Image 1 (cartoon, one colour):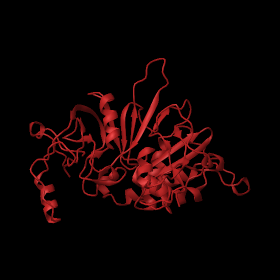
Image 2 (cartoon, rainbow, N blue to C red):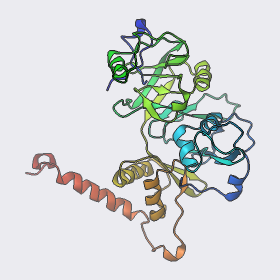
Image 3 (cartoon, rainbow, N blue to C red):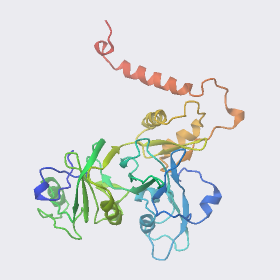
Image 4 (cartoon, rainbow, N blue to C red):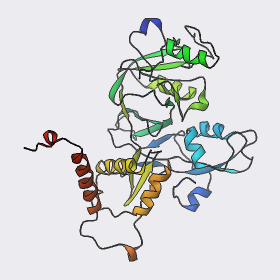
Length: 357
């Protein structure tokens, strides 16, 4: 379905808009306050080995703070903060209580260049260019994306233009949808506090999709837009000054990621419709992760993680040695599953599609 973030009559013909927890960390790491960092929140030095950055930590709730205030301060989104603190009130958390900040991430297994947007994760990764003497870093921010029925195209594209204080031209479908709810939308919304595009917009080289700010930052980290990729106002303003025209943008939809920290494997998963989809996604992620051919996994933990959609990396620790069966090929289950899946797919093909005589 077409996206509906229109911003200027002059460019309307070019652009549509792109518009508990199951994780394990050491008790010591979780007990201490936010780690001291030279980099701003959401900024991490790229690891020399492995593909994981950040740590989960705890902060103390201040008077009159909401859980969403804390999420915004620490660069996490609505779903992340809610799932990490399922027993904490969203709007009136108890002052002095502890809140978990789920700030550990597995980097997507794609080229570390420009912008990488993982729709399933509701998160954007930015890999700015680094001088030869500088340590390469990654910045990561929560995003809001299209709700059901408003999809975002996948693939590699690039930025084409940056607009400050864009106007919004809501299409007829959006105006009709608003009218059915008893609201009224004008044919054009000028720049200002009522503009859903916020104060900054970055156009993409797709049939009109863009990344922009929002006048409703509480929706960042949710599937709420008509297809646009939303960033918090302070985030889009920061990126706007640094992301150039022609910057590489890779939009992916990866609901399961495999991480490696030292010799230990981790899995990070997001809500999935069914267990089979989760296992398919896991196998796809495993194939993209070098060095996992001989991995011995705790399948019970894996199944529980995929079911829970924990949103934080969970160790795929081996079972106790006493119950691990000796295997010459630790991943024989993988080949068996792939053969089963191929046989099922083949069974639905016609004789002509199978190449039968």
